[in-house]
Amino acid sequence: MNISKQVSLFTNRAVAATIVSLALLAAPAGFAFASVTTTLSPTGNGNFSSWDGDSNDVNDSDPVDCEDSSADGNDNVSTSVVNERESVNLNESSIPNGSTITGVEVFVWDQAPTTAGGTYQTFVHNDDTNITTNSGVDLATTGTGVCTAKSQVIDVADFVKDSGTDLEIGVLKTATNGSKVWIGAIRAIVTYTPITIIASSGVGGSITPSGTLEVDEGDDYPYTMAPSATYIIDDVEVDSVSSGRLNEYEFANVAVSHTIGATFEGGWTAPSVNSDNSSVSNPDTL
Image: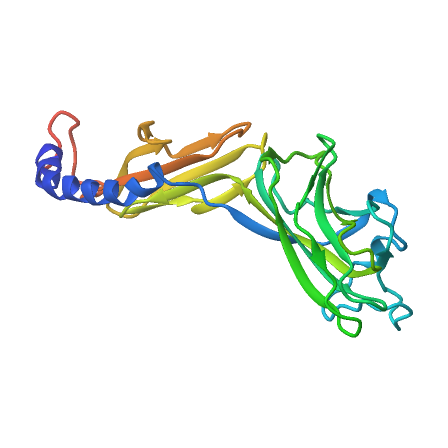
């Protein structure tokens, strides 16, 4: 069978395989890039330090200790003075640069030294913009003998995280009830939308790396497409636009999210070697 007949024989099968592959790739093209959450703990003192104590006193892991003079030495920050603030720095290194931070939920563990009901609010401070956002809703200590967990979602303006981002969380003493407040621990759950590259492949080959990859803004990310036996690369789509039959593709200096997908055409075999071929102009039949 000559090459033209071999190609013709597999045409219908190749078209069918391509249709299946394109169906598999349709979802990433219109993919809504999902938000991610991460828990961040204190890594040092913030810009506000009016309460008694410091960041070392509010970085307890579970179980949290809110009382003074505890055995582990990590006690609390405390105040009864209205409008005093205390904040801690967060380590945002786990959030890729270029991600958009969309929400911060502040978690605290409080206790009353003598009289329950002392009021306070949590807040977020963005040192990049020098904007402090209070929760706007008072919390109150629950009791004198128990360290109680509470949380507030802070409505922060969306911003893009970079290598210099300095995010702080803290507590503000309010006037509704002037009783003293102990805070035994504080941390945050930060919600962000990362820059991602979503890579997928149809039947008959692979793309490496595959799946969803969170990436850092400004970095380069190479991809490799490889067909399986009896397949060739049919097309590589980058952000839903055909880029042709590529074995490799690199996203350089990434600034936004992307998709990449490969489809493969089946029915191909390599010609076998025939040692009896004696003439280039009249080769033996394959």
